[in-house]
Length: 390
Ligand SMILES: Cc1ncc(C[n+]2csc(CCOP(=O)(O)OP(=O)(O)O)c2C)c(N)n1
Ligand SMILES: [Mg+2]
Image 1 (cartoon, rainbow, N blue to C red):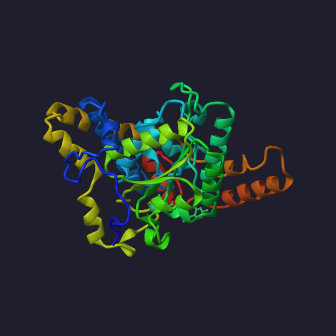
Image 2: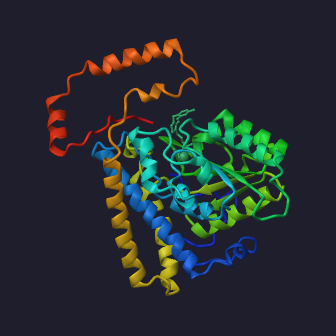
């Protein structure tokens, strides 16, 4: 069973029971947050979870080809995302729905990719949030290169808080086994790049546990590269905010890269193509359910009398409304085109690709729709999409 390894400190400001803890280094970093800020964090986490649940249902109804849940990782994502400055730039993987929300991505836009109607879904330059990357670990190199560029543009260590810029890359525990992540650590360290490598250790890489990725805590993976590491309780939104704000400050001020290991748990399946009951126990799930990131902040806010009934009722209504909007937006997206996947392979025309596109179009057209599919289409006049695996 995956439980916290005792051999590295875990930064925690809120216990699983929702009690606030003093930490000499990190408590001052949340001292300016008032009850309204904490309710804002709570609201973000609840809305992202509602969105996530809705997306899962839509995949089950044939509206999405695939869905990767962020369930259980809301605190790591909202806490770290809320510590970002507008000018910071983020390179996510594919599960960072909470971070996307903090960057201003309209949540239903994320589903364009998972329905196959768009290669991205948002304006990454405007939001300073790059498109999702499904090739594990590859974007850590893109982020490192981008951070080295930011450095060369003179956007680091000027002392101007509106100018100094950090770059962040989000990736998983499994990604740390990819060569790309080691290479990113080498270049980031040697260049002293303004980079935060934010690893969400959700204990699993599909069916492989973290114990099959590393013999040392992932926070210590940076040691040999000269990159300082810190392990934070990723189910604690306040600690995630505090640790991230320190790492971002170091990057922006010219102090170089930091590896953050957010110790959390993937409460759902890897994706909708996965069945975790095949490889993990209900006892493990239960252990982590006791550490649910949303319950923890709710318990704290309730204990200090700052989670009023009106606020909770309004948030319930907002979550339900978001669910409705997600459903109608997705259904209005139309059917994915089978051939657009050929569109952005080469910048200029390419004879082989043209031949492959033509063959594929003919092949697709050779299928008669089944009677069942025709009946479904007639029933609700909506196209459904094929299921894919990740
Ligand atoms: C380079 C590469 N190899 C393999 C895969 C298949 N794959 C998709 S997700 C995944 C596991 C990733 O685990 P982790 O990094 O822990 O991220 P998590 O899904 O847990 O957030 C793998 C191996 C891939 N997408 N890219
Ligand atoms: Mg993982």
